[in-house]
Image (tube, rainbow, N blue to C red):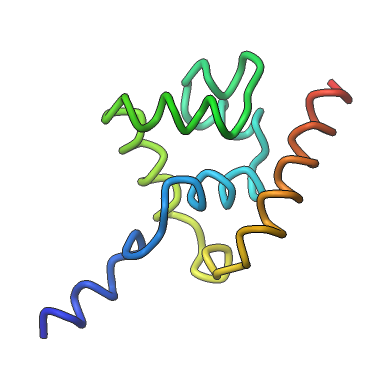
Length: 99
């Protein structure tokens, strides 16, 4: 019974980096900032700096995890990290250079 409950948790087995990447794919940096007012999403955003901030700031991490939980299950599907990180980083770079 306990194993079933653990697997129903959408955060089970998901790293903070993967959560951030999924949210970036869905919303982009501007979209994340409009939903969660955290400066690391607005001023020179990067995955690395955002992860450092979120790991040190429990209230901010909780907001990001809650937003991830509201994603539709198909948007939370696993994609191998190497291709995801590369595509999210490229899109983030394109979004900041286009703005």
